[in-house]
Image (cartoon, rainbow over all chains, first blue to last red; front, side):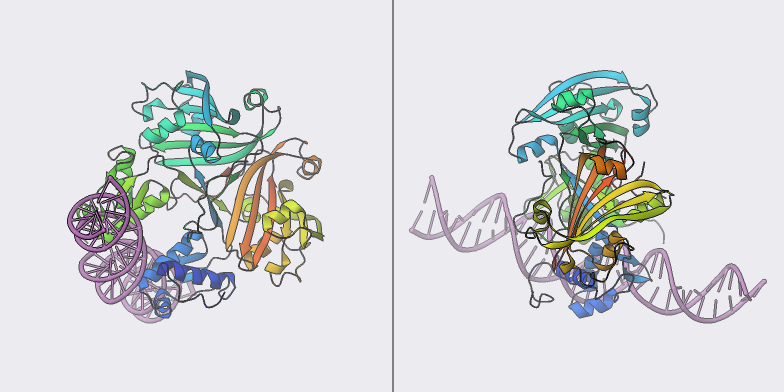
Length: 255
Length: 255
DNA sequence: ACTTATCTTTTGTCTATGTATAAACTTATG
DNA sequence: CATAAGTTTATACATAGACAAAAGATAAGT
């Protein structure tokens, strides 16, 4: 690449960030080393300090820089890099893969919450929650299995909703935005019921996603999603704020 | 300083972001609705437009707002929320869980790259790469299994390195920062060898992580990490830029 | 009616500057 | 000598003002 440093168009802060990143990648600035302060960089790049600040913040968010007041900015020693997974509603995932989406509720009833789920939600065991199980299909083939507990007291206006008809996930997304979420991945062997619903063999390894959301009223819902065997969840490429690769709109790949 | 404006001290932009978020959560501003423009909000919150801009950008990054020039800012219809996973080096994970870390290389040799791995790296099949397999232990019990291919042409200074002794992951992290990374999760049944190395039963469901990194010279390494059964990878709580929960330093939980 | 040029609104980005704050450094003091 | 208090300094955060760019709205021309 011929002279990339200064020249090019595109936001100045990003250019600066890219150049600094390059210097780190190419070990011009090594791990733990202190880099010039904002004022100096501002002079070097012929920019305002605020612009340099923005660029460095970006890199700090990426985990590449450590910045502390007075101490200066230094290259992170063991960069704990962050990857982001985009969680969209299932229907979108399926349709993005060019398949026809459908959805079937397997069971739904009010039921006292078991201990483990209660603990996850921070609710006393035995509280009455809505418990439902459903299957999401793509082109008629099972795609995901959903086992969900819903706390009606945190989702006002939910009592009138019939989840036999409506997609719980979508209803919640549209009507009960959350304030905090926890998400965990794990793997589990398909039990007999899961195998049947996913039309696979018992014991097959399934990627499992556990998601719990809260709003200011308390826990809203916790859901355990088991994906069809072989399912892949991939993270968004490169960096958090990608300097836009051309036509690349990223979504979890479905395989 | 006398009266700190409104409720809490702490960065003004964050306060604004929180307030806007609250209004969305409590459905004061509903999905698809257009919210006041930056100038108006600046007046309402008695802040500069740049500050409001920062706050709204934050929420847009969270996926809660859609912003377009001239069209204004509106609440995202089906928020695709982003969760971030922090990828730290294995040793840190193990030690953070209070276990003693150890590491054993099972195999290492130069070997022609098979088709699938080559495709992942964007390299022609048959190119000679370093292939190694290793096990990471916590308190002597197998923790993770690593199957790695390293492209020496993208990691200068690597030829002299002896991975029988050194931890490949750490060497790479410290000496070959990457420019782009891809990460994917999936689940797989333990095969015979994996079961033996992880001291578990064949067929057990394992959480598998595939990671590939590039720098400006090309692909650096691709690695397939199989976690011990039951392993949980959890995302960082709440929002990307957390408005500092008190004493909560988050790290992937190990179970 | 349809296309095209122009206006206008709203966000994106940058500059220049100032205040606030945390941490490292210095110095005074018990 | 350790510790408490003050000083310095680099970053964090905020502000006001400016211009650019995108895109909706509108007017004009064919």
